[in-house]
Length: 267
Image (cartoon, rainbow, N blue to C red; front, top):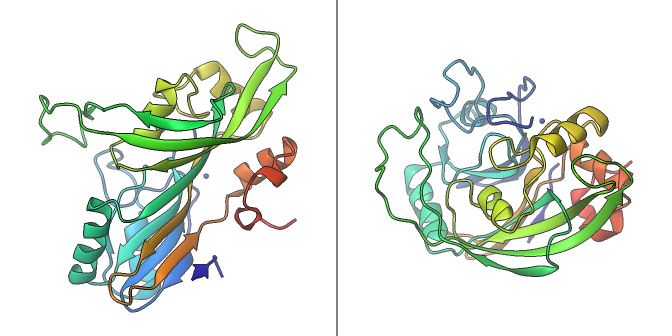
């Protein structure tokens, strides 16, 4: 069953004020929305002054309590799942823990990435001084696995760094584990950091996209979530269309034929 929907280059940049989120899927147990880049999922020490959160917006839209069942970094846009009861949340969380949910992301990265492969690179937890105050500083590196494939490339006749031309790739990621900042850190590990990543990328390329290509956000989007419904056993695929920033870049680089057209905004 396929259901389609009826923006910052750092973790601290807020999303534009919103009164509602696009609902991609809704039934008696779950609500899945398209979260914009810059919006926190819930109240966090990352930004104690933030006044809008996805949790609050979905709660107000539905008129009931909702329960987040997975994470999506503040600057990452896309598919975000909430449960409508504690029991439904436990069942969905179990799917994530067993890796029975397939998550797909698209990203624009620096350089020509390898055509396809598996990044099997354990990650040691990096602690945030505010939001991770209770985490163990001596926690060993955890298994982290990401499947990826390159969808398209472009070479621009612009000297952004050391070379007279600048190369970029459109990449699809399918993480098999869910470590903090996994895709951002794995992209850096293969020397193809995600554009707009202030922590793991390169500022010259981030600034080029922000100043000359109207793209001032982390160019990482969770575009689909596929899972077997914990109650009906029906296969659900939710697709989150890309935002205006992503769409105009894909059009500018003539990448429309390289990506699932259901993810593009018509016109």
